[in-house]
Length: 433
Length: 190
Image 1 (spheres, each protein chain N blue to C red):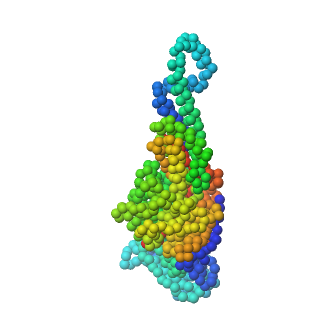
Image 2 (image 1 turned 90 degrees about the vertical axis):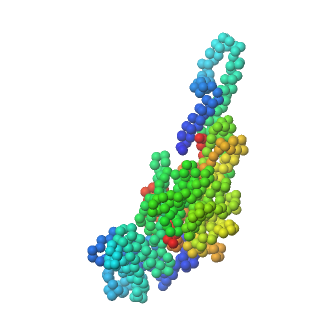
Image 3 (image 1 turned 180 degrees about the horizontal axis):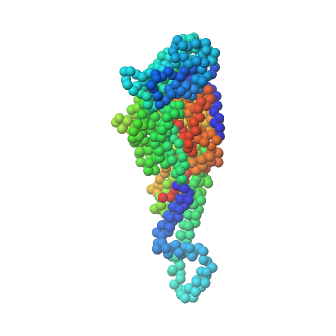
């Protein structure tokens, strides 16, 4: 089975604020920007648990917006600005050049300072300098490398990077008569994968808290769908909704982390509720005989978009959190579901059934126009990175389960096989606010 | 629960149901098997019995016959039900189809005969569409089946439902045929 991932309309759909890659490609050059990250200088006695410059190259390559040069193909590896011969990098058709060094922090034993300088090859000028201080264990180095990747990405593209965000996904394995479901979390680049929960009961609706410290999901306990949250650092569980003889699902943390919206049938029908995580008060947001589910908060926390079939088919509606007033947002196609806002609040992205094909569509909240971003042969709803630069997808390739990262020009930038019967919809975290 | 387990569960339930009809369970079981299978050998015995005391017979037979009929009916129902443990739905629909109604009529009859019998209606959806909306759709299907059974006189207290969304497919394939098998409500006796 092949993924057929057709990007029908790409950069032109959305405002430059999210699709800023067009700006990057600035000086009229099409395709990915070429960047050289020279292997970092290291003060002599250091053995680091992780190669930082390699991690940055991997990150930038995977974004689909950069093409990082293999160090083996570099004509020279300058140690400082004075060593740079810009003509050499021009010959290699490079746009940007990054030098870096790792130095033991004399003020703080056990810590290192990683500094980078970036140069524009075309203008032969220094663009910016950055540094991070970190301990030398693998976890901290990985964090530092992802942070530096974000800074490089943002300086050059003008868009916030996603390398410090996380992705959660559920795998399903068949063990005898049972299926075993595992929740995995990993870095945005697919590295650093951990299993954080497993059960024979189904698990759906994985979602992240604003600070990436918690996930929440729906699972079945004693024949009842319940919503739980889990503190990732300790594995502790907290009950969000376990109303008896009711179906509880579809949690969504508010952007400030104080509230969680979810769906429950506790009053007899699929309605959306908001729980205050401080007071534990629960209030009902929707009132309708139809299915109301899949809530998702606007970036300012004032609105909730959700799926409802109150009009006869599943469509996207928006509720005002303060007064519960509801307006219908989508009218195109016979099925629009699982809406979520873009990080800047301008777009609502939805899974849309158009001409019998499931697509990802973006509704422009300013113009009210809906455009299809991608179409897929199968219903494997992708999760979109918070800066909308990438999607992640679960699919099957030659009978094997794989996760695929797809950049907005439709290229698969990474495919990662996962040892499981299948992978459920992955969930990309928000920015760590 | 697998289908074979379900059938076992029904068989067990049936034995209990039969035994509660009156008389010790073992006797009831024996009677039903001779009644069903040994028609020819029974003829001789009957003739002998007639010869011995024809006047007593009608009194004994009336009760036994009624019991046998009830048992036969229960068994026939059980056999019919075993082939109708799942009802299917159209894409994005939760209306009970005519075909499903035929299946559900058998369940209603059985449940009306066995008022202590509990049933779980487990709703399912195919994988197309989002998991959360499909959860709602599968619950609506289970509710539609529950409503139909209640219309046929089944006591509300006998019925419970659970929505499984697209999480427990009967067929893991991605063809239309697989999807059709997954849009279903399973009737599970407990």
